[in-house]
Length: 331
Image (cartoon, rainbow, N blue to C red; front, side, top):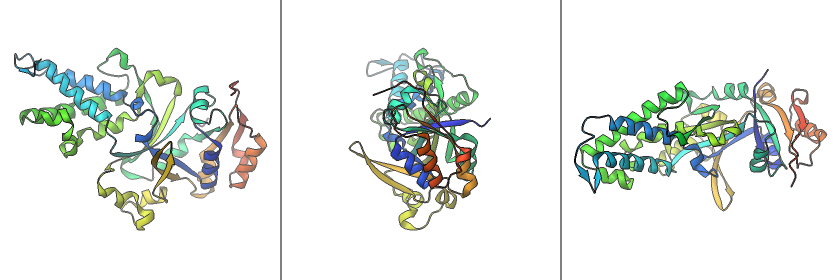
């Protein structure tokens, strides 16, 4: 049986997806709660403190601004994690899905209060599509949920543990290099982030997008993320993501999958950048991509309307299941 994940959306988004055969990835820094995906940072912070406090000399009697050496180390690491949490300069784009096909919170939050739909995408087809992009710049996987309230030093997956050891070690290495040069002021004020050495955290931040606090576990979320070590405030991103204007790209595979390149829209008194991933590569691909459409509990669409839409935009209606939500949610 094929595994599906569901993208809850408004009717206007449904039309856009069917007509253009695209999945929209939006600037991850513009999410409603950018801290909801920072659970891994909390655990990495604990692991780094554990590493630092196990080193010789931690029990030194030396003080720093009234803090013991131990307290000062914890304070510096907390500052480093605080700066990472507030970092908004990394270009990363996200599309969100859920394993739940009829979940009240998703209808409320992402499908126009139940007036929209949930589109069931085929996991294997998405994975096959993004394999075209080398170097793992596109990643699609289930979100891991971590109990951050327990202040644990590890988490329950091998991947998480491996990531933590690598990221925590890099944090410690960076911190020691600044301490040895007596440049901890740059750690405290965050100016070290502007240096090449200061970019130690980018892989950690990219990994953190796939971890959330377990208070969100009922979402059963999957994420498709376009991640790169490209910085918004630096000009080199134009050579990679601006081929719609320049006419050329140093990444042909990326250009094929995102033919319109980087675009912008106005949303909630803000301007949000996004990338539309094209899955129109032949009937085989787009007919495999969408397997089900669930009509929201407050949506006036009928099943016949959805069949008409699918047929109009070239989808094989025999391969798509259409049904009404069983939710009793009404507004």
